[in-house]
Image 1 (cartoon, one colour):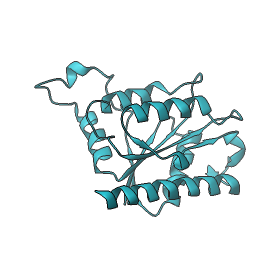
Image 2 (image 1 turned 60 degrees about the horizontal axis):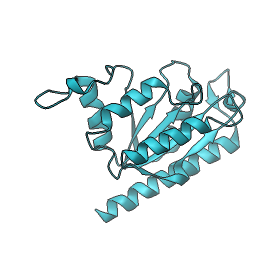
Image 3 (image 1 turned 180 degrees about the vertical axis):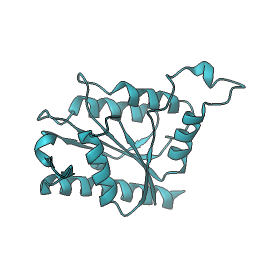
Length: 182
């Protein structure tokens, strides 16, 4: 089982980065994180007929294509999806890597809602891209700063750890079932 994880935050000490690292520690799957920070701005002319996709785009596409499932962990900015993450998804829209790919979406925010607007937007975008959004693998984590030990930078809240673990199990189960059907 291979999971490709994508973080919607580029900050080195991002709470969402903490969530992503914790999720990867909780999974029994082989996991890798895709780099979206080096992607150029989406421009179909860079990838059109006869063009070769820029190297960072090709690497992202390969990471998603090789995965059995994808986990996206993202903050919410101004009730929306961070631009860097939307840019990454734009590069993947027409290339086909998300078709029927099991995907989970986790958003974490300092607000009590846990980034529910961004979570809903991401799920809608991924469904449009024909990704197999696994509802039980989607999670909004509110008041994220209260769930992380600021000294160690690790999630210490047992309920959050339990929710993350359940989300990953749902994603892994969906990926296993998808693999059996092929």
